[in-house]
Length: 442
Image 1: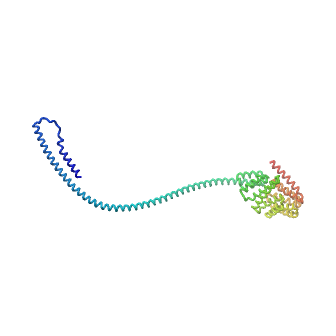
Image 2: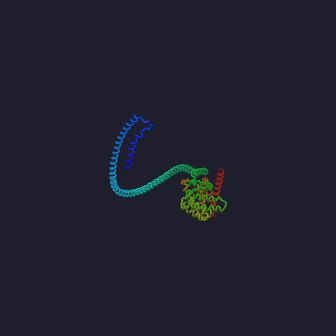
């Protein structure tokens, strides 16, 4: 440092001394003029005094600078020594403080790292919880979306069902009206018109068991057994415990068997008839009509003991129906038990008369047929013929005529003939042929 300052001062002095020399202009050397030389000598002397004065001042300035430098040097040295001592002391204390601070910092760093790790673990735990909550929320949103879709689907299905039910209800009401009108035409003997209405009702309600039942019964009475059996099958398919439909189906098979030419086919039809009639009885043990129809089947097959038992069971179910007693009397007469048969015919006459006098409207022609045969067997021929003709005039279907004829022809083959039985048969056959001709013309 001192060397640099001394060097700087020397350079400054040299620069000041060199200034006059460099101020002279170069000239040619002429012949000296004494006056001129004297003037120049005076000027040089004057300049020398100026330079000397300047040199003295410069020297004083240099001395002051050197003194200042020396003072500064001493001060700086003292400052340096003091600073060294202070810095040494400070450095010692600082080193100790730094070590303590370092240890504190390291301890703090450890604590901070521990806290940071715990914070990180907490963050991860919270992040996992948040993600779990997000997943749960997403699942709930998905479930909610599915539920909304399901509700919308159910609502649409309910709307469709409501519309369907409304349409079905309207169709059912229309079908019910058609069924009622068809029944009225059927009871009036207007079979073709009744079938039209039944078919229209079935178009509206194709699987309705009652419509198929009434339609099948009408076809069966019209001897259209294939259509009748199909209608009864639809009825029992829709209602498996429909005893009346099973009974009518068995009756249709029995009637159909009487119209086939093959003995084997007839036996097969009889077996089907027996099967469905027994099914009806299984469903209703007190089903008198099914017992009576099964008795009629057994009688046609010559199984008279079984037939008689069926009619006795039927009469026990409904003792106030002359039809069962009439068949008991007929079988007893055929078997030669004439006295027993007469007693049964007396019961038939009484029961039929009570029903006729009571004004029962439903199929009263059957009561007239029963009372006519009973009076014929009891030797009341005039009254018997009157009842017989009355019944013939009110019989609605050819199949009903055939049913009466079957029993009369059965009695016609009995060992003891009932007087007037042939005339009964002739009257019915004549009316049956006319009925068939009329229907064929229609």
